[in-house]
Image (tube, rainbow, N blue to C red; front, side, top):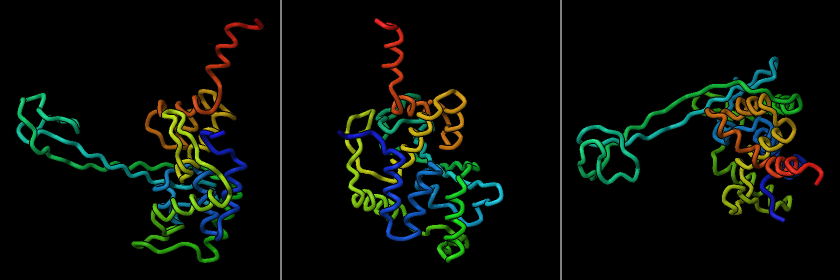
Amino acid sequence: MTKAYLEPDEVDELERRATCLRDQLLIRMLFHLACRISEVLAVGVDDVDFDQGTVRILHLKSRVRLSCPSCGARLSRSSIFCSQCGSRVEEAVADQTESRRMRNVPLDRKTLEMIRFYIKHGGPVSRNGKQLLFGINRHHAWEVVSRCAHDAGLGALVNPETGKTRGISPHRLRDSFAVMAVRRDGSTDGVRMLQEQLGHASIGTTMRYRKVAGQELEEWYQKLWGDE
């Protein structure tokens, strides 16, 4: 039966299939930090606070804003005519903006000790004056996770919203953490803590994991009928 997410023991097996300490740590951090792949790959040695047990995460997000070349009104990607001045849009003006958000997230002691060991044995890579833990690109990271999933015999996962199957990728580890967290603590406070860990701007995005994590609708419906 195709599943929607990985169980923690399956992520452990994924980690065991790594062929080097760097790849093992990469998989572990993707799951235990529950960060986006771009965020994990941006983590440097100086971002790890061993005393506080936290990791500083930088989230960069680029947005492209399209506007009418005639009046400057904002346009959607599918706009043919400007809703403000009525001009036909031959070529919209694109302005790119970048937002930066920083957050400090907790990390378990075992993973912190793995990072310490990794640093001590020369794992980090220097890039543009910063000591990055991994020094690889997104495609390489995706290949690491995909290869380990194949070696572990883990099949594809189903998207609970679309029903389509998808391979095991770095983002699926983030999803698996979120589902595990909601299953263990689905309270309002628990979901808000998960929102902070995941770095979601809106709690509505985080709430989607409650639907994936359990059988809330079925349990609610059964409670309506009592013991009938």
